[in-house]
Image (tube, rainbow, N blue to C red; front, side):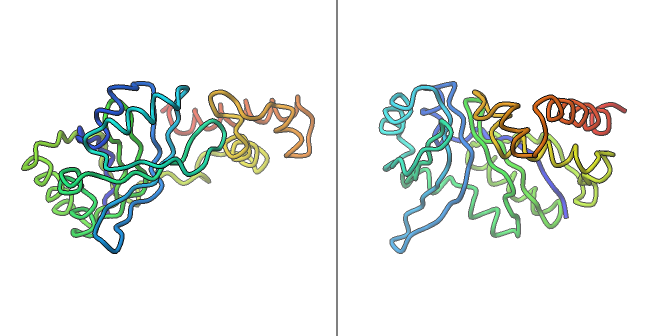
Amino acid sequence: MLIAHYTLDHPLLRQTFQTVPDAELDWEDSFTDADGETYMTGWIDCDDDDAVEAALRADPSVSDAISLTESRGRRLYRVGFSRRAQRLSTRGVIAEVGGVNQLITADVQGWHLRTRFPDRAALEHVYEFCVDHDIGFSLNRLYQESELFDPNDAGLTDAQHETLVAAATSGYLDVPRASSLADLGAELGVSESAASERFRRGVRQLVEAVLIE
């Protein structure tokens, strides 16, 4: 299996991101209802929620958009797509060749995807679809699934691993932060200074293991 990281210059929500360039989207799910209409649910992070909702209403690729809930400063939207946007969707062609989207985010720079493909031919088929429909395609990274990083290879202690995971899930790494070092320490059952030391040592160990050769 191949893992591909790539960016699409896709018309879907392009106008929204151009109107509100600091907005960022984390995809949750896509589905087609009984009438054949395609929808997406995704979290949009932006300081100006009113501007995002106005931009979505004006976006020609959007048929309707509903804010479902809010959490940690982000809003979860259900977005319906116009007929043209549905025809240009890569979701169907990726599924057709046996691909599976593992991660999708979007911002003013485009749609950033991590997709698992059964082979190079499947990836090339998606690339050709994009070329045929004037969708910009930039391949950022391609590797075998066996080359995926194993967290055990980082040399983290159990305490460091626990601390880094807790920092991510508790909102300590969010911008703005949703929790403090004191909150992190309380979750781990240690002092604030101990949580700080574990976090800093864990980050250093992870950086040295993954980014520094």
